[in-house]
Length: 275
Ligand SMILES: [Zn+2]
Image (cartoon, rainbow, N blue to C red; front, side):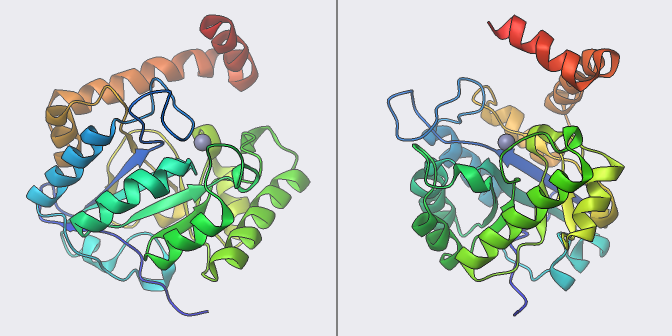
């Protein structure tokens, strides 16, 4: 298979030698929009446009090839601060709303697709996936069924990783070497299984900035939500200011009950609270 050009928009913003990964989901104005609206994770279309303009203003413009298909380009080690845009789940707004904005801004992104969501109501179709790939976007796996990988038996885990990758490779005709963990759940066992299945980089959803070449461990990501104001977005991209502290504090706060109750207990508690 030919080596793909992976989009790692290069940015001169400080601090150097780091890779900052942004995590989006859907782009929706309201529930009436095409796709699966989420009151927390759906960014507004105008908000997304402003954020992409912000990246352009900060100098995030280029594309760089990534050695060996891994996520991090050699430039990262050479002292550049890089920003990578990612989307999880495969909402149809990724294609209909995000792609045109990315293209107009000269940016690219990685789209993490859950295999069983493809073609479902409000989600990207097979043809849409092909369109994304042909537009130069990178397709990664977000699992087969969106089950949390750390809850699966080794055999089921292997099937999730292999089937989703094979499906996406067959549709796009490109190698699929990036995995983002559904729910951000997973650790050394899931990373090892992913590497065994041929993935080169595994992305989680803990906030952080990745130093140099994080191919071996879990790659941190900064979540962008409907509540992310432009000033906070710029702070997150620059990785300085109160927005960084707030996101890290929130993550630690949400992580505490999970550590105390375990994943299952945490999910039960969350269901009760959401209800
Ligand atoms: Zn997800």
